[in-house]
Length: 307
Image 1 (cartoon, one colour):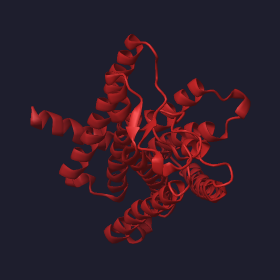
Image 2 (spheres, rainbow, N blue to C red):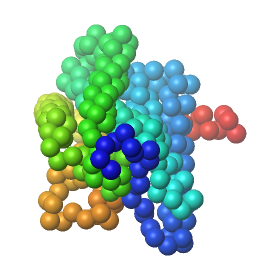
Image 3 (cartoon, rainbow, N blue to C red):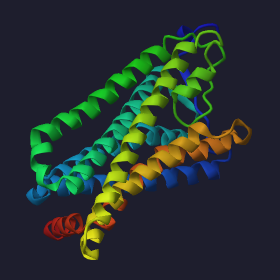
Image 4 (cartoon, rainbow, N blue to C red):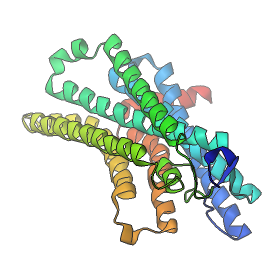
């Protein structure tokens, strides 16, 4: 194919060749997808219905749950449908939608995790100014900035990616349409602009990472200055879920994009991509609810009330 205008569909990388394994993949992904929707949906409902949880930390957690639901819904349903119907095809419009939505939701997720680190920093290091620095108006503005920045970031990438001529077929070596995989089938002399944008993305991610690390350095210093062991434990327990979620996000994503080419293979890339695109949205509700007594209590009241 000499130009992307002739491409009407793309072929995604299948998880398995045999029908039995395809159905197993469908069942596995269906279980993970339903667990993610249920977990994030319960967190959304619990926070929305309990006025005691209408605080900055839970407001940002509500936004994170929305992003996680959107992120896993962008990639998993199409992968399940392809496995169920024994096909690899995705339409050009569907591929473009995935190329836009996945970076949008993932980048907004990253920006929101950065904002949540600032929230924990203010709560522990400047508790007397918490209400002033993180009022409802400020929280809404920061959440809107995270969503808006992710939208603009994804729009720029999508417009730039699909402006490139695609000269090397229509087979994508991933289970969903990913920018780096689309670049592999573009003309070799036409992708430098997008490579530059990806380099800028790396700098952006590094900046968020450094901000989060510096925030937690200050948080740990403040926690260690708390005289009572019970106080230190309580302060640290409010940060632990966020720290685990951030670690899961960065470790899986960095391994996916920075692993050495010598250990790269289609099957390994597939597994690593599942780890950073599917597993975190499903685990985040569990991580945030396990050590959070207020959230668990509110969730239990919601469930028993419904029963």
